[in-house]
Image 1 (cartoon, helix red, strand yellow):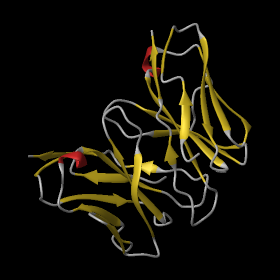
Image 2 (tube, rainbow over the protein chains, first blue to last red; image 1 turned 180 degrees about the vertical axis):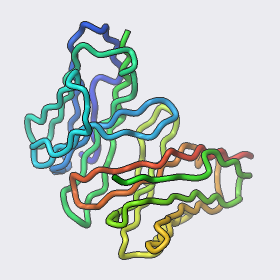
Image 3 (cartoon, each protein chain N blue to C red; image 1 turned 45 degrees about the vertical axis):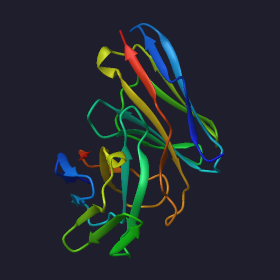
Image 4 (cartoon, helix red, strand yellow; image 1 turned 90 degrees about the horizontal axis):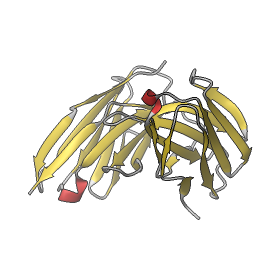
Length: 114
Length: 113
């Protein structure tokens, strides 16, 4: 398996809902990432997990809560989101070597917050 | 932190012509420079990358050059085809797994018939 997969593809939620985004890879990558991408903008890093431990949090609001249950899975738990959080949420993964750190992206979850 | 500037924001070329997109970075410790292509509604796709120990890398119609002294790198696409139409993002990182990729603002490339 040479791809990063994400579910769901689309998600519509109200501001009081709790939902989760899921990401999975079976390439043996030990670094996994969450990005947020607004229309016509570049991906913006949110979180990095390295060997299942949170290593980077780009000052993301606490209504976004990441989780890495094992080396193949990455979740993003959402609670009390705002309409401005509507965006494409991309997961990526990479090896954790100095010379092999190419990041590969999943197809994303298109999130709409009403 | 790292800052990556990318130009132009839009680029229109005739099929068969070449396209060049340029990026500059600010962090002299950055040593990994990937380029991503993103078609509408699709994921960013890694098309080529270069590391700071190399000045140029080529893969068929795509090439990337790096000038560490000037802190800039460029993407060159030759013999452009309509399917090259997409948004292209450059990025920079300090390398190693689990490090932050800082993206440029993107270039919308349109290849006209």
